[in-house]
Every structure is written in structure tokens, then in C-alpha cells.
Length: 150
Image 1 (cartoon, helix red, strand yellow):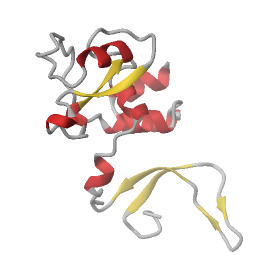
Image 2 (cartoon, helix red, strand yellow; image 1 turned 90 degrees about the vertical axis):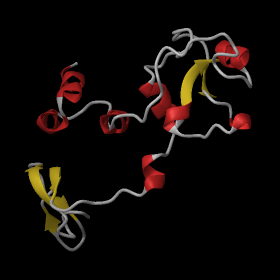
Image 3 (cartoon, rainbow, N blue to C red; image 1 turned 90 degrees about the horizontal axis):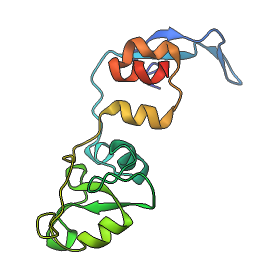
Image 4 (cartoon, rainbow, N blue to C red; image 1 turned 30 degrees about the horizontal axis):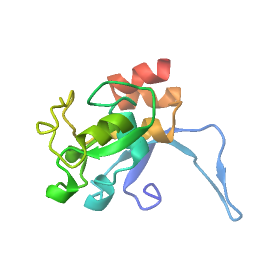
């Protein structure tokens, strides 16, 4: 759609055409934006458990365990004004989440081993396409290249 509207150009294309009932088109594999396309704020801040767990490496940020049931925890509890934003949610195993309860990290005597932050955009690419096509690696930067090679 961005190519059709003239907001992007095709940098890499697939060998086969993209066909419809009325025509045949170039099948883009990699596109480059020609003009800035503003992403609505609501889309930027959307949190899913899968993206949250991936951001935190599928481990509890309090004890580091990767086993057991993972849950979403608000660092500043919602009952105390904490928001459901990337900077305030972390992955916690069920026992740590239960132990922390409705208290701050300090009040619960726990340690937050990594500061919550919005995930890098490449995380969403990795979740949408677990196997990154080889043709994309020159455009995604270092961390994506290592994932594609694995």
C-alpha cells in the first residue's frame, strides 16, 4: 500500500510477481520510505504478553528464572497510580509476582535486575517473522543479522 501511494519505493523484489484478478505487480521484499509515515501513539505503546516476555528474555526480572508460569507485573502497582506502559511493566514468575503483590519493589525487599523500557522495533519483526529472510539482514542492523544467521 505504501508503494502504491508513492510513500515508499521497492529496494528488493521477489522473483515472482504478485498477481491479482486484474493485474500483475512487483512483489516487494524490502521497501524504503520516501516520506515519514507517522505511527499513531496508541500503536507504538501497545503491550502484549508475548512482546513483553520476549523483551525480558523470557525470564523473571526479579529472580531470573525461566521455568514456571510467567506473568506480567506492574513495577509501580496500578492501585498506586502505576500505568500500563512499557516503562512500568516487567516479566515476573508467578511466585515473585505473588510475593511482590501490591507493594513497590523496595517495600517487597526485591531487586529489579533490569530497568523496563520500550522494546526495540526489531523485536516486533523477530516476533512476526521468527526466521528473518536473508535478504533483510543488510537493512536491519547488527542484532537482527546475528538472529538471521542462527
